[in-house]
Image (cartoon, rainbow over all chains, first blue to last red; front, side, top):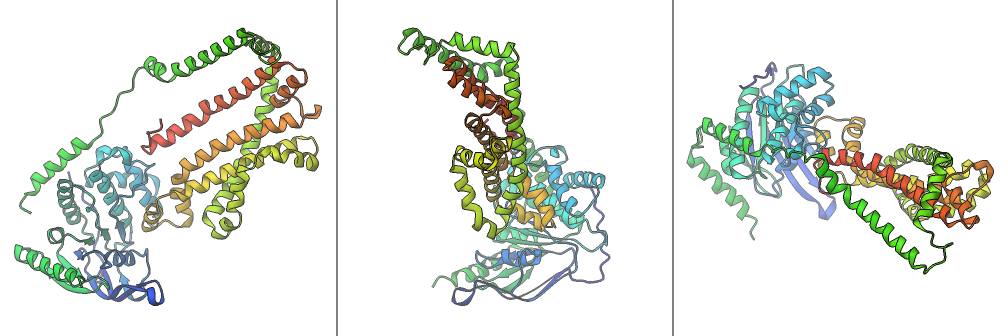
Length: 258
Length: 290
């Protein structure tokens, strides 16, 4: 049932992404807002890292910088993977294209030939169990199904590189707009896809439970300016860690009350 | 966390089964005809009835309000003598050529205005202003510039339709959700690929609305130009036919001409733009207006 994807891990480097001292300032002069202040972060190939923080902590900004959609004001960013793929809170599928064509679009931009495109798109849709609705348009699909098409499209854009460099998937609260049951199903779907594809994932969320369930490592960011507060290894997650992270998140938020 | 993955897979499959849209089956042809074809026919019949009654009441003299049957006879005469086809051809081929030229000019113009800030600032409002200027206003100037020649007619048609088409494209591009080009960039689309695969298809509904309005404006402008600028050199189009009817004090001819002008307008809308618009909107799930 599950299609296996050939993602070779030949890279010699043991970091997929490395940020050091990344700083981002919006605006100028007195109205300037420091969104990120000296963020250091290392992600290993194939690692699943969750960025956790309240609103205004610059987690989306951080993701955009890694994605190359935004530039850092200062600091260093090093990416040893193929082109990073991005998934947003909204599926943002092209409404005039079928599910399969939406996935193919990513491959087309990467210059993949027509036949290979078709085959690969179907393969990826099978991976997210949507092979049957490949010819449906976004408006004919439910919210959860759309987000899975978006996942397949994101995977298409990151795993195409032929040089065997590891893949990187950036996710900006991708399940936040879904209902609880669908979110639950999609989280397990994502874990399964991650295990099959061996993609490094940076997953932004404000939900502690989600972060602990999905990630191998949880990184807590402070708000305004965003800094790394603490990290937890949550591979064998227990309820104590969950409680501890919750306490820290509340501290970070209540620090802004005055 | 407590739920084993197998159960979740089943839940997922269940959700999908519930979510897959059920295909609404199409009603039979006669029912669709009853719903969409019959109301306009009834409206038309009512209109004819009112007209006939007004004529029978003899409130207006015959040279102002003709009997429906007399107009019908005039139509039958011009059709059976073949005159109507010549007239229609003269006007239609001008309108189509003028419209196609307008599309070729307005499309790059619209793209420029939408994507280049300086160009928008410079001529954006001028273009919108031109849209509210009746293109008849160009006829006197065009006659002085080009004489009573086809050039005059084409100039007026272009001035009528280019602003509509360009503005439609600009509106279409302005209304693209910003997330779509952003996704394109995240997927690695360059400037050209983004325009070709994301901006243009996303702007298509607005562009199509502009095309539709542009066609209406070129048809109207053409009629205005043909009514005012008449010469043997220009041949007889619908506008000249109408003008001749007026000169001959023949109300039957005048009404028949108006009827033909309307017929072309409705025909192009029903045969060309309505199906196109339907296909484009339906593909995007925008079926509210259909």
